[in-house]
Length: 111
Length: 115
Image (cartoon, rainbow over all chains, first blue to last red; front, top):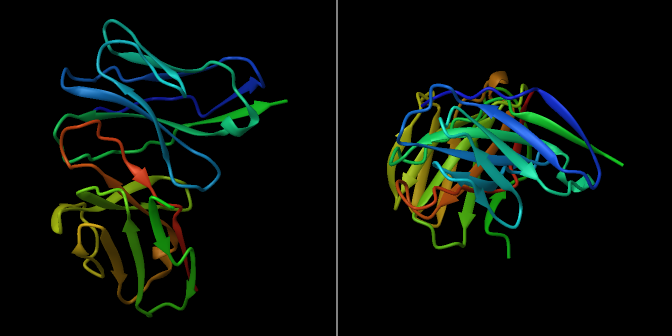
């Protein structure tokens, strides 16, 4: 599986949009981009995933560049409860759901 | 109702002991997993079972033995516990093991401390 690179930590003001970048320059055509988050030692929580097109759900938006070498997770209106470690993961289709979690980005939402 | 539940949440034991962690999911999923999160917070897959059949075994010491009595349950038994086994163990499930959304549903974790 391709590896990802994320900043170690980011700060965001409450109510503002949080934009979390992820580089996956070696991604191949059959790999999806997934985002999970882990709130203070709870189990990781699925946020969103995509292959080529931008995606949006009730939690976030995922913007994938045209060359698919990077992506950005957008939390449109961050709240204090969004403080967590955010993991960007690439996953080969049909690989038995092997998710390899990296070190992620610690997002600190501040009042 | 908790979708993926693990017991116990906390476990403190001595080196050399044998212990088990249990996991149950009520989502009707076919596939279940064990992940280990060490002190550096890296989350690593250990095992996966699909409908009671082992499909992933990520080079885990054979002191760790998963058992799946049915597709709703996946237990983890650890023999001869070592200090390095101290970690948080997460159980997860997914609808299936290949296609679909690939979304994993995680339990709250079981924190194991070996003294």
